[in-house]
Length: 309
Image (cartoon, rainbow, N blue to C red; front, side, top):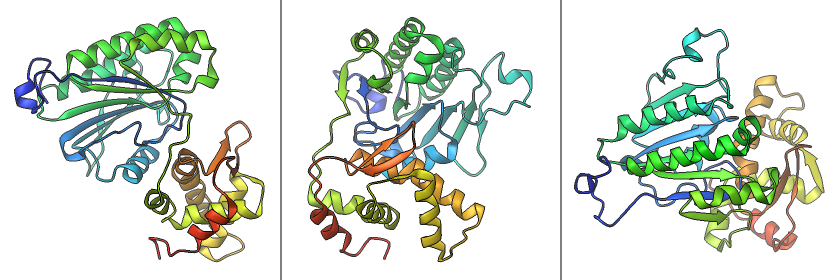
């Protein structure tokens, strides 16, 4: 993908243009709404995340999309090293290539410093401007920036982000949980975007898609537990998963941590995305979602062999 006037080199038609999309609701994970029709080998992807680690983002990408993109940038506040030098909070935001991968990490300290975040995003977009690839910028949760900086400053940041991305021929997807703000704040952001998608509604999944979701043994385990229990805390669910996976009554801390991370960052969000479970973040409780998924239908799918078998 080239610069704003380089349609020929990018393979785009002259009348195509980048799109800015606001996703209302849904989980931070990559679903079809956050990463539509991507060809990873021909795409640059920049993820901006306050809460998620590099590992969580990469595992999430592999789960939903598959192969990593040609260039993968991550701006995160979850892995800021407070023992780092002063350059981590002043000057140009430092970028760290991760050994043995095409991933570049920018660690940030203060989500209220939107000017610095804008600089970090621009550095990636400028580097990718002359590549023969598509570019996607994905902000996985806008609410932390609104909380830290207020709606007005966040509006200004989004305006500049969408404008810069448009000039550099990049698509933008921003996810915002409308339950974290009043209607006035949500409506303030709407005009900045080409599309506003309500991701709070459950998509209609056909039988093949449902089988694909339930082709993972960990997700099957979650649903089997919930069929017997009205709801369960995520920590208890992780403990039960660690016991089951390792065939022991006393899993080690490492075994528990692996189970908890997988559930919290991948499997519970994926099940919630398709409307099979509901996750209450304040209490960290998981339950079967209300809807059209009958116990009989779930049990029928759970009795078929999984992809992991």
